[in-house]
Length: 110
Length: 121
Image (cartoon, each protein chain N blue to C red):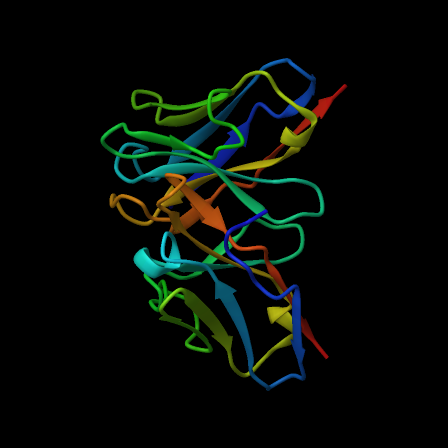
């Protein structure tokens, strides 16, 4: 059971916006950076966001990250069919001395 | 170009051992932190272990005492020695390169294609 909780699924029509929440606690999100990953079917994860809200080069600005207290959010605007994937948040968990991933969210484009 | 190629996956009996390797190219494995992340069939990602550039290692509670992460700078490879394997260790194992040399981060900018380990009873 992950210490980072995400909604199982979110969906929206093409061109619309979705947000994915990642709820944690003071031992993880509250005191450590959050990163976000996209995993397309059958492929390895891809880093979308690091240090809460920064995008690696090559990641479009349709993807954004934010954090407030012990929760983080990934936003995807201008939704495209190619965005259909599983999305995971991640952070360091001080009480475990280990990294943790969120439970994962499946994004569907209607 | 950064590339990570895992090997060593396969079938193993419960209680047995397996060693995974990750061959790195385009960078040196001791420059940034390196991790193993696994994904059981049909489930989410699970962080397994990390080794920092300074050599410090950390493990998920589920594998602590059974798995050992290491690196060979001369061969530029990352390894994961897995002992006392259990059914719940069945997963695709990915090696991943950290974005920086910083500590207590989970920012993996490069990933291998993964190698499947199946533990049977």
